[in-house]
Amino acid sequence: MAEATFHFPRGFLWGTGTSSHQVEGNNTNNNWWGWEQEEGNILNGHTSGPACDWWGGRWREDLDRAAESDHNAHRLSIEWSRVQPSPDHWDESVLDRYREIVRGLSERGMTPIVTLHHFSDPLWLAEIGGWENPSVSEYFTAYTKRVVDGLKEYANYWITINEPNVFATNGYLLGIFPPGKRNLPSTINVMTNLVRAHAGAYHAIHSIQPTSRVGAAHNYRGFVPFRSWSPFDRAAASLLSSQFNNFFPRAFTDGVLRFPTWFKRIQAAKGTQDFLGINYYTRDMVAFNLLKTNSLFIRRFYKPDDELSDNKFIANTSQFMFTALKWGTQFDVPIIITENGVENLNDQLRRKYLIQHLHQVWRAVNFNFPVKGYFHWTLVDNFEWERGWTQRFGLWELDLHTQARQKRPSADLFAEICRQNCLSSDVVAQFAPEIYKEMFPG
Image 1 (cartoon, helix red, strand yellow):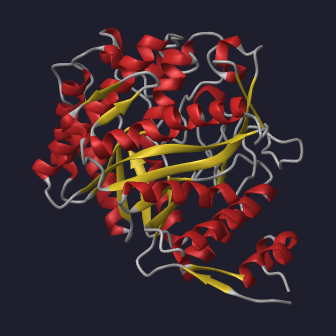
Image 2: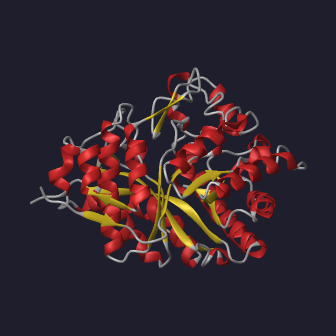
Image 3: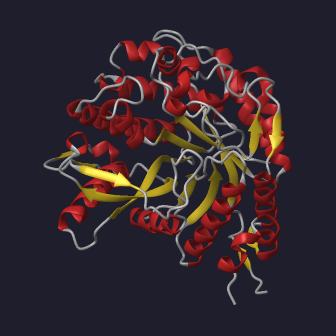
């Protein structure tokens, strides 16, 4: 059989990603907790509840598992509603707790990547209009200053906002995230305020910690015209890509917010990404369809022969990982893959998905794309927003009733890759022999 080893650059960051509301548990003072209590918002009526009990201290054992698996980095987020439970109160004990967690990463030899906003907002912010409030960027900047000043001793990488495109789209256009709006002007307003907030946070972080590296995590989704010969399908795919994929990273590059029929300049946003975070999961086929009046006459779908995740949420389209990274090179900054993974309870698809996607990452590195790290989503099964507990993304399986963790084979697969800083034919033969010939033909 053909054999090979795909090496990654020295100093490559390997780890997993988590977010506060999804793992901490009992985040009762934020808008997501309130959203979960309303009937019909979360699949099967699920609630986050104790989640993975990180706030109760189980972060220690989970980070021990990550360190023992040779992860050299971890991405986590800070819960704004804990740090600032009311507009006029900062909880220093909470910052002490987060300082302990981030210090714990350093003590385990892991580089912290700290996200300041990962979908959840304090209830008090939601009550005054949330991200539609014109003062939200000032509130966010003040919060950022407090957190960075408290954690700067242990953290140097900062992600201001996770997936601002998903946050704005799902919360204000599609209505599946809080506050549940379906309003285009509101969406545009929120997108504008997200750019302002990112810019304010970026400059605040650099004023406190000049050597820091600051970026945002962007969800890149492949949009492919279903009929390549159709100008309507091509136009639909182009519209989705320009507004969903390009809007925020371009604004953070040149300070220009590009909407379909007009643009706006925010000078403070120009040059505000020291690295580009890319969250990549899958791609869509796109077709123009006159019946789709509620989605701008655009139909998105997977191909009939696509290999799908458990709940048909993700198609295994690993070649588009390379496409996503190539797209990212246009912004002329280092790239970190801040999320990539698949929901899969029995772990069969996850092993194949992980190997195939990392092969594409290796290809990109060998094209001299400036890829500096890879963060798998996620460390342990967690609460997946509007889909509740129906999706299992973890390298470790979580028993919701006992909080017990059970290691999946993919955890050992990823550990071998992290340990060796490479993807080898021996590892593929051990963990996903069904794709060996595809990976190593000849």
